Image (tube, rainbow over all chains, first blue to last red):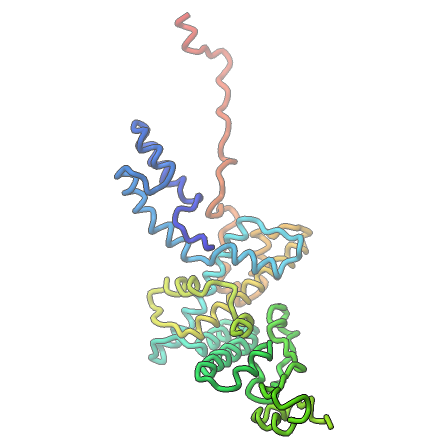
Length: 239
Length: 123
């Protein structure tokens, strides 16, 4: 899945070209060095071990290029191509960005004598560095993340609201009361936040009180939903 | 199912890799899981931003392929990004990490006229 293996074809020729020169007189070693860097000869192994940590570090310090390209394609027109050097440079830019924001957040942590970087530190760093247009979508994101984490916690405790949530089919926002009026998703301009924020407002379902019958249990079922039905009560008018 | 709720927030980038990159800095101690998710998501936003702006520049220059120069122009146009990123971009003359050196190979020049091969002496 990831190109985390240290023996990618890009790095191999460099150490091996040196090896081949040294071992021209030794055909056995040459074949093993060409096949894998973990070959049988000691010299081969020695050089490979020295090269290995460098290669692993280079791969690990960048985001996987496949992910980078996939995300880029979402923002680019369908027919657009990306040059190879642009792909690699963007890979490096992404890592620079991560280090940059993290470093700034970490400085704030240290000034306040804390050891753990929190979400607030990150948001503060983004705003300070001039990326405040990210702060809003990020705040929504983290709120949703927190709600989901809390919901997962309540699900483990076995509260009856679990079945309600499963039929909702959307994000967890609005679960604790009337739907929040989310700001329009237009201004962000990235398009990727929109689908996830789709609030199917008409998809509230009654809780598992279907045993009450098709319409006769209206009074009973309303009261069992703990005030949720104040939002949407489709069976309220049935008579 | 739990996956329905998770998919709206599942990041596109591997979180483990983001954490490794953060840890490359020796000063960084611990990172909250929320902070990690935030950084990962914000990195996606940043990448979208870079891609969009670079594509705009490519279209302006009537090119279908987004090149390094387009990226550089896009970075320059956005002040906060330019402040931290411009110096990291490779110079136009520098090759990328994995550039092939095929163009460096040249055929050896032909020998001057009148040269005799050494074999001629032994015939």
